[in-house]
Image (cartoon, rainbow, N blue to C red):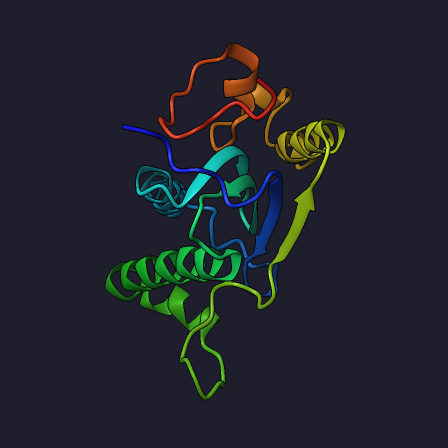
Length: 174
């Protein structure tokens, strides 16, 4: 089967932050929800994922959209699905924690992601390398590990060893 063509000739750096920088993603099960959502997007030919890091209160991705998919739609669907899935778990197992995400808004009772996530086009290999280094150093700067490849919820080990334990990563520079 032929690979779908990419909609752009460049990757994008994407950052989403949890509401008020709350450590929503501290439990690994919530990071796993994000991983499964990324796996779904890749499997369904919506994106190519080159790099990521999932922190307690934010995430960074380097990805590229596949032909026929708009950035706004993919970002919205990714954040909406992950928020809904996390909300369902909080309702079932941690209703008191869910209250931290209650908002006074007309269109929702709860909000998990800050509005207007950052999305920056990456036009050069140098910029992509800089962003990969930046995201892979996040857990080191947060004192969660000594070396980037020691942090589980990151693509750093993929770039260190060449082995894709996640099953959805593509090497951006080769």
